[in-house]
Structures are given as C-alpha cells and as structure tokens.
Image (tube, rainbow, N blue to C red; front, side, top):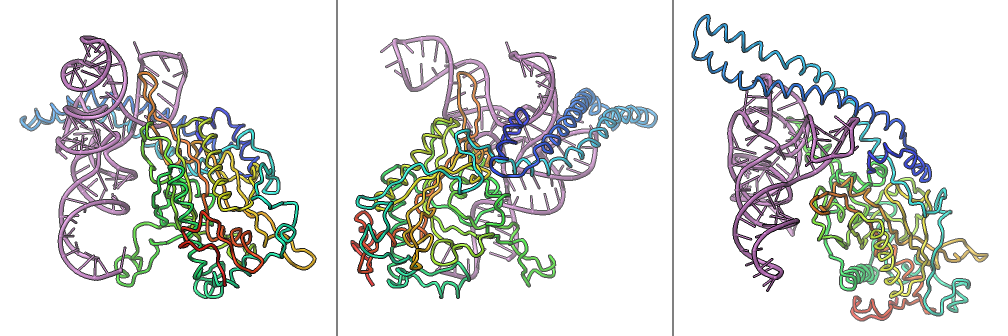
Length: 482
RNA sequence: GGAGGGGUGGCUGAGCGGUUGAAAGCAGCAGACUUGAAAUCUGCCGUGGGGCUUGUCCUCACCAGGAGUUCGAAUCUCCUCCCCUCCGCCA
C-alpha cells in the first residue's frame, strides 16, 4: 500500500508510476473520495467536539437530578423530571446531525480502501522503462570455466544435450503420467533419485543461507487467511493465481438443519504461492524494536500456483507446475533507501554464489517497469541456462535458452504498510513509529531448478555429474546413473 | 465434536456505567547522584486520522472486530473473530 498522504501531495508521481507499470487505476477518483471524506470528517468532528463539551457540562447535573428525583415526591419530582428531560435533549440535535454524516463517511470507505490497495508502488527512477519482459536488460552473465555462451552445447561439451524431460525419463527421476492421473495437468511425481535430488538441493540451499549467511530458518504456514494475502500484496491483484479453500461454503450434512447446509469453518483459507507470504506475515501488526532489525529469514515451503492465464504455456516437464517447493529469503530492515538497496544487492549476491557453487550458468536481468508487479520498486530476475529449452534448430532440437529461476524484489515500505509492520525509532526525546522496508528473493525453487541442474551436468554417457558441494546431501554420490 | 473461561498500552496486569486514554509494575527515554557503570531518586513515556493560526497547537477515533442500549460505554446487550482449559477423536 502506498501512503495516502504522499498521493495527495504528489499525485502525478503515482499516476506516472502506474502508467509505467501498465496498471490501470483511477487515481483521480481516489483523490475525490479522499477529499470528500476529509471534509465530512471535519464537520462530524466539530459537531462531536461540541457534543462532548455539553455532555461534560450536563453529565454531573444529570446525575444529581436523577438522585434527587428518587428522594422527591409529587410535584417536586415532576419538576425535577422536567428539568432533567430538558438537560437530556440539549445534545440530542447534535447527535442526529452527526448521525446523518456518519453513514456518508462509511459509504465512501469501502471503495476508497479498495482503490488504495490497487495503487502500485511507483518504480524507482533508475528502473528502465519498458512494456514487458522483452524490454528487460541483461546486467551480468556467469558461466563455469570452460563453458562459452557463444558456442552451442555440443561445441562446448562435445555431445548433443538431452532435454530435462528426456533425462528424467531415462534416469527414472519423475513420472508425469501418474502425476497427471492423480492431480491433473501440470502435476508430476518425483521418483527415486529425482526425489532425493529435490530434497538435496532444497536442504543445501537452506543450509547455505543459514550457515553461511546467518539467516534464521523458520517454518511457515502455507494455508493462510486472506489478511495475509492482502497484507503481502498478492491480493487483490493476484487473486486468480491462488488456490482458495472455501471453508465457509463447505457443506456438512450434519449441520444442514441449523445453517442451511453450511457447516464449515468460519473463514476461508488460501494456499500460498511462495514462502514470502508466511515469512512476511510473521510480524504482521507488530511494532518491532529498532535493535531487532534487520530480520533475515529463510524458509522452505511448498508453493501452490493456479497458473491461470498460462494455458498452453510450458505444459510439458517440470518448468511450470501447480505445486513445488521453494527456499525463500526475506529481509525486513529499517526504512532507509540506501540500506534497502544494499540488502537487495547482497540477497542477489547470495544467489549468484549459490549458483556458482553448483556450477549453473546464469544471468542477471534488470526488470523493466512493465515487468514489475504492483508491489516492487525494483526487481532483478536471475535466469539459469537451460540447454533443453528455447528455439529448435534445423534438426528439431532445442538450442538452449535462459529460464527464470529467481526473482529479487525491493519493495520499500509498500508491503509493511499493508501488513502494519513497524519499528520504533528514537531521535532525541521523540520516539516515532516507522514502517519497515522489506525485500525478498528466491534462494532455490525445485523442481524447476532441477531442469538447469540436469541439463548442464549431463554427461556424454547420459549420467548426471553431481558437483562436490551437493554430494554430502546425496550420501556421497558423485553421479546419477540409470 | 461436547462443556467452560478469556481477549485492556511494547510486555505483565487493574478497572466492570460518569474528567479513565485508561491504576500499578516491567521495559524504554531524559535528568540528578557517580571518575565511569550499577543501584537509587525525579520527570517523561500508546496508536492512528483530521485541521489550520505548523504549535512543548487544536480536535476526533481507538481497551479483539462489528452492531446496539444510554444524555454518557473499556464497563451493559447481540453477532463475528481469536486464544486458553477439560473431555472426545486423531498423525
């Protein structure tokens, strides 16, 4: 969420930001609602102040009179009663005036809030302007020694590569047919060494962040309340991407007579598409101590994505699937642009180091304005080299292509404002509560990561070489063979 | 699933119809004492919104959330959410 006061003061900045991100929101409408609400509030508050003043004046008298009436009789009592009634009527006309204004304010709020949640965070000035992912800018490339991006896989390695689908099939690492039988399209089953490799890379990535970089590992719920989805900024914009557990709609025959067949729990739940939701939700509605910051969390969680709107895209293999596991890193730091930027670089650096340790060729992309979601000011994607992906050559074999495996977002206070996550800071005698800044980045998502892993480490004999750092997680195995 | 008990400031915890935005304690901040620190003492110390005369200013809201009763609600009533205890079931 953006700061309404900032929007009021500088609407053009937010209009330009939304335009650059290609997000349509009616900012003028929001401003009109805001203006309207404020003037109504000023009126209601003035009236209420007056009412309060009268109450304070007449309250003690009312108490006294009421007591006197109890003791008095006949005419005396009637006289006192009349006096009491008059006192009581004084504030009542103010009350009815206020009662007329309040519903007007209440009527404005739902739409005002809905609009406010839709205003995207403007991209930073140094983010290149562009319409979509094709305008992203490559900023860095890395490959292990002996691998040259300008040459084909065959020229580099001396044999034609198999795609991950072929490797997975030949080495019996996954079973797509049965996955689909069980759970429909975009479903899979990892088998044998496939499952072990999956668990090994996840564990390696978690240990890497924890042991090498001091992140605190925590578990997170993947089934969360709507509040957490809105707070982290995945709702309302990404509602159709999330699985929805409609508990309130559950039909329970035993409860049918009382509640018309609705017998579920009291609120709906949503499956999270990333551990970021759980990690950021941990301190929702909290005021943190400045000394606690920065918080550095890492989790591994199962992620669920409906992939709505992606029909027909990447339907085969392990690339675009409904359920996967991901090691995610999150940093919550002070509201300081320089510090936010520094963490962003570090968090990207961890991923580069991780990919280098596993000898995966990759590149960094500066995402352009049109590719940013509503919540980020800046985003860097990491794409890993996938020899079995991309355009087909004249023999009908893929020529290799980069595929997104990581995404590092810098959000300023956009997310923490929604989550109401603040910290207390002191400057001299004054203490102030400030919304934190937050950042997040993938550490490793599998099985997608298994694609570049298998395809890059395949050998001429069809086996897969395991890089040394991963071997301890595979009981010392140095290769996967049929 | 059944039966009870609760949700009050950063934390603990009083208040149960009338200057209560809220006692007390802890934590925090400032000052005094001290060579320094600790201890002690004194003072300050919730959050959010709105206004303009931008001020050690005015004002409104907030005691889980919502609706109601009342001249007046943290306090009474109803609904919702959440937590806890016991029993049942269960990996």
